[in-house]
Length: 416
Image 1: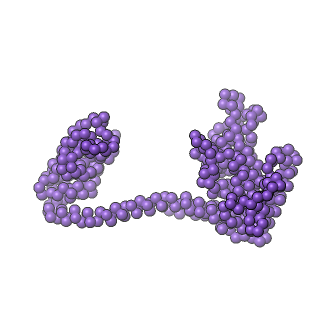
Image 2: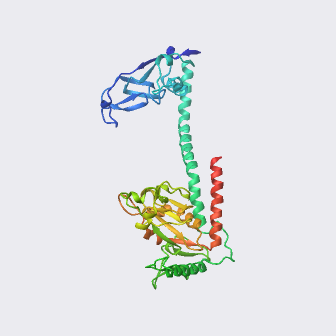
Image 3: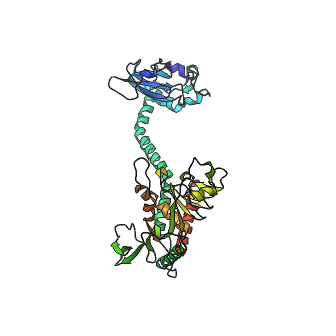
């Protein structure tokens, strides 16, 4: 049969209670306090005792249903539902939940439900025995529903995390040479290193590069890596994180490019900033991609009078401070940076995008190596001493092409 809600329920709002009387955490001798959005907290007194559905009638969640048992307090924004003799209390609770009373709320800044509007809602009323059977079936199925909801939640989280996790797996496989075939006709990376050494000597002779205090060379002997630093040799097998193909070699990042941190010109010198035309990048401007625009500029005078350096197009940038550690960018414009950013100008034979993706794959590890309690940072020294798996130049390009193809496919799948 069809009835109005007022025919089978008696709806009564509770009483006002001051917010100062409501405790956020449960303590012994306190009672639950229900308001317009559900459980508000706990109070020292109660105004109801028994088993009742409660309708929240004020606030963003108005129309929500809670089931109260025992002694509790209902505020003026919580409507207690008393059932008549021909109505099962638990059936009433489940029925009100599926009724979605929020649809009857007033569309104002503070949504609300009028009791007389709820009372007028027309509903189908089954016989009392049928109500009890409905409740029994619901409670039989509830554990399965809860399990399903839990699994659905985990599946949703997995779905959201999957693209990023897959990206990490792609990068990890790529930097180990597992996504590309090794071409025996490619010049080995060891020959590339020799050419880089010659380039560095030329730059030092031309006074374009300072002579390094430490010169590192990594060689393989008996399938173990050894590092020679200033004539002294030591085994570094415990540092090498994974195996690489035979025509690759391990080097320190400092050996494959000219690295330098930026600086901040004195903020109290307007002549360093006013009418500036030279982009000055801060770590917040890094986008883990190609950088084409930078919002802040400095002047030529700032470059002449301070330690700020102009980095050429193609430079690879990495953040060294705070929450941005490991954030990356590749310059598509000439730009300077602040001291929280380290720039690498790769030597000939080092593909900047390969370096970029390698650093991206190592973000978590670089963050682990940061130091400092207030604002953790990773120094330039730690970056240049970080191990780098170097493939032949052709393979560097193939690896980047493979990564970008897979990333593009993954992005398309995520949007479908």
